Image (cartoon, rainbow, N blue to C red; front, side, top):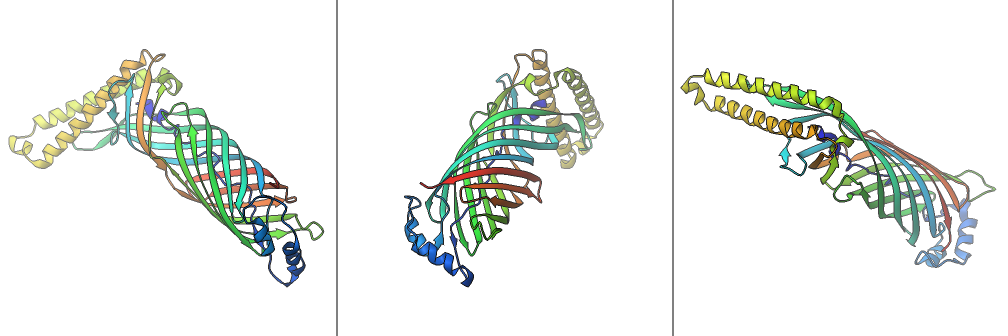
Length: 375
């Protein structure tokens, strides 16, 4: 039953936030007339973005067209698991829904990513993602059965923490526009996280709208500024996951034998109580659809619990070679969380950024720096 802990390494929503916050800005206002004229009269010297020269002539100030950023990302999220099946040593798969309940399922991930990007058009940035991640899942669960009164009770409980490493790769784009220092950015990307315990990489899609304002902080250094923003962070990941893992990599094996033996005893006691209750009913009472439904539900639960416990007990004694196969549907408890962030731009080449997400079952932090250059 402890295989519940090994099915969560799908998680890694690894470091999937946007690049440093730069944007094409339309200068406006009487106090910026000189700057606007200077932009319009200048010759744009780079090949990218496409239509960069036309945007400059229209009075838009463009960021350098290429960049490389390095980011650190940390995230903790509650998870929801459905349609779970497990098997041992490539044997039969057992359905666990309704039999096992989670009291805790928390995934934590941290990652470093490198992101090259280019401005393809004046209002569209595209980028790649390459990252190395470390993650863990902290899981607690119990096995529940029904007795003769259809009352559910817990007969087995445990928990564990599983740690693993992964590689993330992907790509994204950020449509964005700025007017008078205010900006709107709609960051979106797709990524695949390769986790050794999964049959195939976990797929994620992230959408992060941001609305903010850029402030110049030094009149003598017009390129120096501070930007602040607020927005949302939405994560969608592929719901179906399958994989296999060595049993002794995730289970406190020294505890399992006794816990399984105790759980088997409780299943046997519950089965005896159900049989005694049923035998004590008259024929008329047994024909009552309510009693019949209770009897069948209790038997089905107890039979399934016994099969799974016996299968688990059969591999515990050979744990060094035992494997667990699993399949499930999963999702974050909350798809959205709120984000706030800020960026200090030393000049048009170098930026430092920090961002935090909260107000849901997911919390996160991102920090990074970016260097930009013309292309």
